[in-house]
Image 1 (cartoon, rainbow, N blue to C red):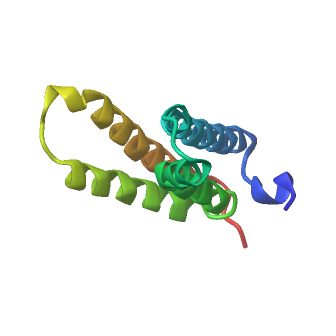
Image 2: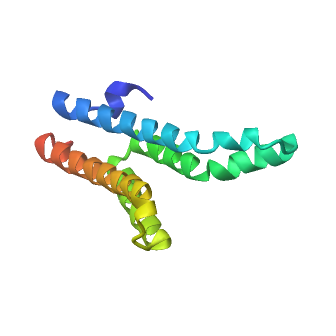
Image 3: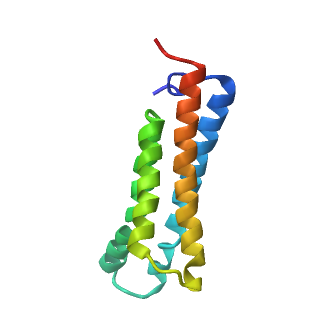
Amino acid sequence: MKWKSVLRKTKANRNVSLTLRILLLLTAFFFALFSVDVFSEGYPMWEMAGAFLIHNIFTFMLLLLLLIALRWEQIAGTFLVLMGLTMSVILGGTSHAMTGTWLLIGFLILLGVLFLVNHYLGRRKNPTP
């Protein structure tokens, strides 16, 4: 897939699209950092590999959304917002210890909204035939 065909919007919108995708990739890597601690526990290799894969399920979902965002920004944005809202409902509670979790959830929702806004603003400026 060529970048020019993927990013066929105005130049400013193209830069915003690329920045949003890079932010999503960095977010996935940030979540992947939390799973590295399974290798220091001293368990057998198969258990560590299984724990590593289980800890990275959310990272794999974000990387899948990144692949979707290469072609369909509105779908990726919608799923990011839904993922953030679902996480907020599942985690619930208003504990002070969960402030970091709420910041990450808020960032995912913000990123999804930015994907949606970028898609619809780019569509209004440059309609495709």
